[in-house]
Image (cartoon, rainbow, N blue to C red; front, top):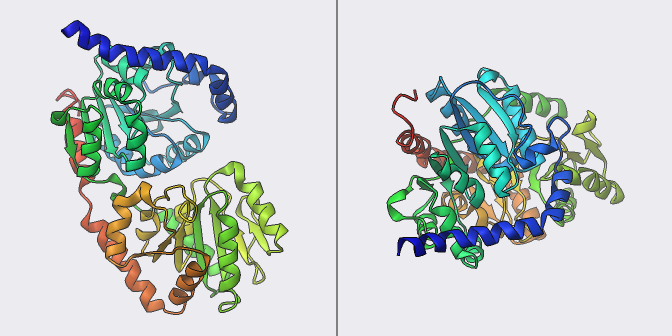
Amino acid sequence: MATHALQGRVWPRLAYSAALYALSPLLGWRIWREQVLTYSRWQRLGMRLGALPDKPRLWLHCASVGEVRAARPLIDALLARYPHHSLLLTTMTATGAQQAQSIIDEQRFDQARLAHCFLPLDFPGAARRFIRRVKPSLAIMFETELWPNLLHACRRGDIPVAVVNGRLSPRAFSRYQKIAPLMASALANVSWLAAKSPADAERFEALGCASEKTAVVGSLKFELVSSETALEESKRLLESWGNRPVWVAGSTRDGEEALLLDAHRQLLKRFPDALLVMAPRHPQRFDDVAALCQAQGWEVRRRSQGQLVTPATQVYLGDTLGELGLLYGVCQVAFVGGSLVPLGGHNVLEPAALGKPVLSGPFTENFADVVEPLQVAGALAIVEDVAALACALEARLDDPTRCAEEGQAGINVIKAHQGALARTLDGLAALLDPSAV
């Protein structure tokens, strides 16, 4: 019976590995696309990981830039709580790597304790090489980063695995149900799963995570800490632009920028000196968005090129990485992108934490757990289309008192929902040797 159960757990991973090998030409193209010049492409195969701190090691994996931002409080807390350990941060994407590097460059902690490299592709050999080289005391996966061969390599190396800020949207759950045996095989290697909500925990358990390994701790996204340096830069920027209405559209996606420009055009009829600060989500689209603005005849300036905003500037393109919080800090009203098009939205808590009234399109399912409390408190409004967005912007820019009240409501919601970080750290501590302090 035990042998049969073991075979039932092994064959989905073997079939998955065979599929990866079959897709290796496509995956090779991804390696090429996601290259960052300061990192070796061999890291995608678990080799040439660079110099790693010579200390006992914790390993935290975040998929991309949004997850790295959300994990920032956890990164700081782990480094503070385990002073004799180093922390290896891995990402899958180039933008995630650049966000990780920006944290390292801040030098808030000894750089000998914090390092970054790319996560290898989930080939069995690459996973084994990576784990042998890194030898972490604890592996921490952020949200839904469940790579079967990497998790299996951790289990073979007697390395405990935690999934933190675990989330599984209904749409993702539906997809994973189609590969339920593989997910059950991967989740069998998880030592502890810290879910954001009871609904997330139920979905993970339905996919095969043992209920005794699952805990509901809340969302780490509420554990936001604003950068004082970014806030000071926001203040300087706003002062240099003069006393004019400013709204920010952050994390915008393909097909969305044209809609936002239409809303801005409508807003200018009431506020002719209004400035739109637009920050596209992906750097490979920066030039395309700039070209769109110019083709439509907008007076546009680009932050990446150091171009200064003048009284005639209508659109300021935030085409840099790691500065979204800084840009949110300059506005009276914030719109969070990925939500006017059916992509599930992005993190509405970033502007809310800065005391900004927040607007979003109707597609917010990826962040439903944080959208709902903000909406109930009156800190966030959902707009269905361009006309509704323009009206919502006009109503708030017309009423500074309303802006202040909605902004404070957002701060209050965030404070009320904090505590997930402490609960997460307690759960992680139970997986580490008691001497790891």
